[in-house]
Image (cartoon, rainbow, N blue to C red; front, side, top):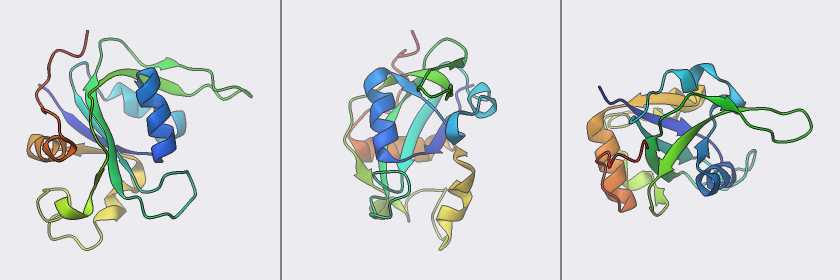
Length: 147
């Protein structure tokens, strides 16, 4: 059964992972990545462009499907070896969350919707994943990008 995930990271971090075909969550922790299976949908939400900045970006910045394989450690230098998972990222455009807040099950009617994102990884409904994909200009179907 396909599951759908929303994860949180700065846009700069997401853009690097998208360019190199991987994702990282929760500052490189392995456990959250182990919850994901090949074919699962993944969407990134970026509250800011750069970690620690408060520039108000608040946008979905990448969408794709988990590829076949297990989490593995990358090397970011200076002893930082975060766990990663390969993802087939779909061509998309970054999309502000604000117009979708009332249309997503995750956020509709919740004035403090951002609070649930503090854990860095949240399971989404298929409905929400499809709505986000549509807003980002892509098909939400799993196109077997898990190869």
